[in-house]
Amino acid sequence: MNFVPSEIMQVAIREGEKARLHAPPNPWVGAVVINDRGVIVGEGHTQAPGESHAEIEALRRAGDQARGATLVVTLEPCCHVGRTGPCVEAIVKAGITKVIVGTLDADSRVSGQGVELLKASGVDVEVGIEEEQVRTQLAPYLWHRITGRPYVVLKIASTLDGIVSMADGTSQWITGEEARRDAHVLRAQSQAILVGAGTVRSDDPALTARLDDIIIEPLRVVLGEVPQGARVRPCLERSGDIGLILDELGEHDVLQLLVEGGPTTASEFLEHGLVNHVVWYQAPAFAGSVGTVGALKSMSTPTIAALRRGRVIDVRRIGEDIRVDVEA
Image (cartoon, rainbow, N blue to C red; front, side, top):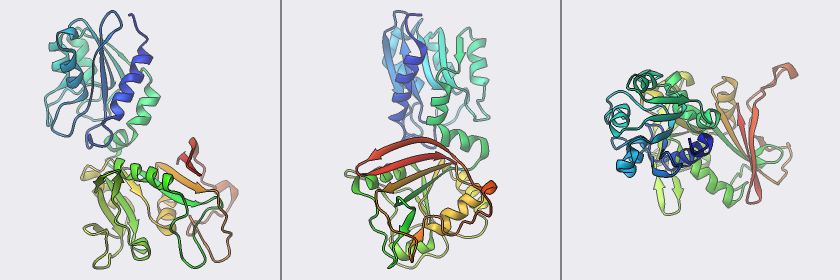
């Protein structure tokens, strides 16, 4: 082997990221074909639903050079007929002799079966290269396949002391333009955005994702009743058990749900243990507690032993603000 598998998997991971916005409800997979001299002869990523998977794209670009080559792919190749044919068959037909997989697919229709079929066809298979990074990249897809529910990302923008609304009720804008632009990427990566009716009444958000000249419209979900003429319409208006709402969204192929609601909605999701990931934007500003509203004003913690702890996975500066990513 004239290449380092982990290095080529990094290429596949970067390729998969190109599919992040258009692939869902399919996973955003990347694939690379590399020959026995260590030269990459084909790269590909998942296309829009109904179009080709990453493996097929990489094999197509490799052409005849795929025979005797190695395929490096972030997710286990599929072995069932869905909107497209099984990738396993195409890999064997192309003459690939070795497949290196980042992680197994959590979809019950695949889940190890793709690897076993490749092995049964005489293809050498290695699983688990850069697995932690791949599973992080595909976390919403994997979570949805395991639980049937969307992966919940809670987004909060506050002052450094955790305030989201001033004493007079104003809240726009606490963070700067760069942070707000970054938040629109979060929206674009999510198939649905959820807020409470109070946020709709106070801010009248459109809840669209604006990326340069492109406007993406995820499914809008509001907890409570939406006033007529609100910019968030058309939307789903829901109330009651949040778990049941998540079940419904999962059935509608929502892999990632972005919760942008105010303090009451954010507190409710956290208190019920329904948040997978928190993205907290903090401005270098201080508001104090008198008359202002905290980001989690509806949440109470009776003792230090009951403190809800997460794991910081990233901290970075965006413009004049910081973004903290926490695994909840």
